[in-house]
Image (tube, rainbow, N blue to C red; front, side, top):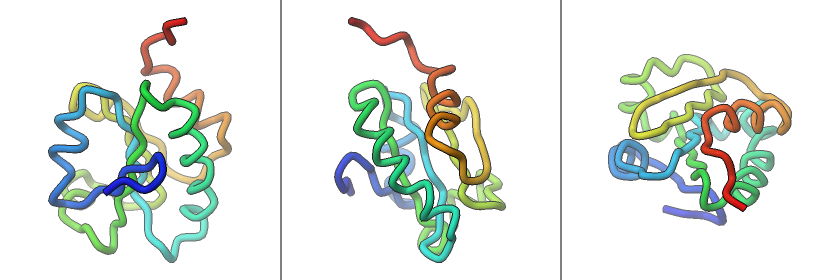
Length: 114
């Protein structure tokens, strides 16, 4: 399900939306009760808008979807995992400012075509 620029992921949609995505995707593993998760929510929405067409941003609630986070070893939230070609290429754990998240994803994106 898509809300704004964010794709809401579930255990059922993970393979199709993430592993089979031709576009790199940043996945935020979060919980509704998590303060730091709430802090980066608006930042991820901005990043999704700023990088539309270059990267997708997805969110997975770990309380409602336990299979994928358990399989991936997600133990702390928020955890951001960046996928490219269906593989996790990098991850960061914790709440970070926008500039740091942008730097994190820019390392893995192809240069923008102008």
